[in-house]
Length: 365
Image 1 (cartoon, rainbow, N blue to C red):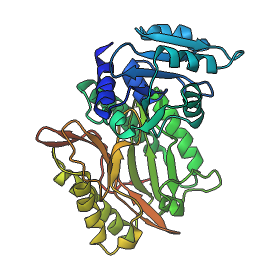
Image 2 (image 1 turned 30 degrees about the horizontal axis):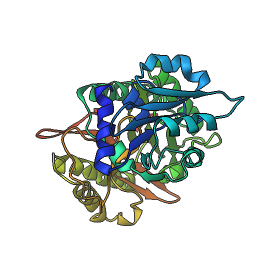
Image 3 (image 1 turned 180 degrees about the vertical axis):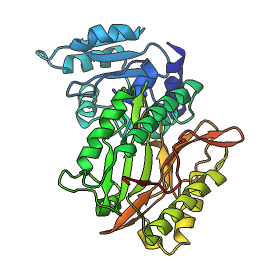
Image 4 (image 1 turned 135 degrees about the vertical axis):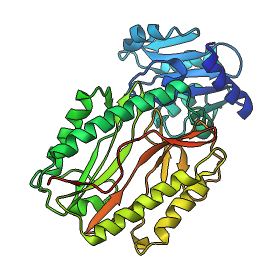
């Protein structure tokens, strides 16, 4: 097996299961070096604790599958005849009693097909162990993240330079998407959030075509490019035309919380300690009732992945971890402020992969 597949065999041995199964998604891409769509056709790779791997592959993907260079048993199937024969073939080539799967990724119909072919099979959720392999980033992973972030920051600078009162949120969102691709994005890390005025108080807002941005509005942009399979995730909040005293005070509070995250981050710090310190700044302010979210989440092939930066998560974070530091305050019906950076834990502290300025910024003047 390729050396990287040994990681999954080791998980199988540690969990005392016969094999690990992966389906298209970030873990599948990491293991096999190629990306495939997740669609209505079952598609999975099975990496045993010992021995040759196996795969169930839709026949229409076989020419692409050839590029993987997979040294294992391949059971392909066609739409016309259905996929159950392939699952029965897997049961014969790789009889299993216990199988570890990605609990947040594998879909129910694949689970049912495995059970139909192997009725006594015990399927266990190993999401934490499987996805945990992606938590410590390699130098190549960090380079891909930096490329995605650089694209995102260039696009943001272009878009903010063009913001004017009277534009709709949707028009700004469309300009941002065009700029991301013009700057070299392979895709979007996620659908951008572009929200102004009262909409900025919704952490996961949708851009409105009917709302014209007004002088004095907070304008929140949360977005990221995808490059070489990795995601950027950046948020900046600016103000259109001017910012009143309350807006400035709230912004300063969020910025101090964001900076506190950098102060505390080092190898061995726990996710709980980071969130407790960052959220503590917000709680000590006059705006504690505006707290809606945890500090952040891991970032890599997925825009949200382990570790989750929240109180109660006492996982020590090793060097090589990348997470988002994104405190925010949100006043329903008024405005919200979020400042988000992508942070790499280094051998002796941390480094911000994002470099876009965080000073309070007025646009559209």
